[in-house]
Length: 282
Image (cartoon, rainbow, N blue to C red; front, side):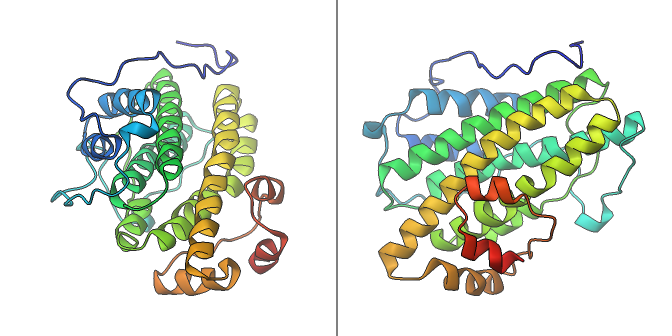
């Protein structure tokens, strides 16, 4: 078992792209998305990003959607959000349940990024490499959280979870602009706001290892939300839309949750939100 105060390890072992994956990156992303085993999904995701180059990306191919996405293990059991109980982080089981919820978010975030790669043709090559990088970083986050959860005597799948993140992926499956607006800029941006209060609770509970891991996650998530902001604005410019006025229309059309305070203004500014957008949140 690692000491709670041990430094967070962020380096990953470089591995060649597994031979069973297609060479073309978007086809490979779809195949990894269908992988149900979390450990294999992590290895394949990080290897895919490590081995990809612009020449390996076919930006125009259109794939048929498989019957069942995403690949995931039989556990955790997925229940409605209100059916996931709230537990005190000041008991071992309660703290494990909180960390499990974060672990589940990170597993879903791998799937969200991979889905953004295979699903939407016709984007610049940098769009696909951006989201492959996000997927690889989310795979690291999942690994760090899962290892810490295991050090407490639990594992991924031990607690019920909900499927709210993937539901928005399904709603925006045919609209890349809505996807960029409502997944990274809305759902994932909520993590920027939620991390500091969660860290405060974990620090009070004495779990400094979890606090350190969340520092890594928050740092990387600022970059992920910034990627969402960049491509959302790129798409708006391409289509002649104003990003500030378009956003509430998309949020209403796709029934996106409204962000709730307190907001992490510093992190949101670092992620590329404008003062006008932050004023609308307020």
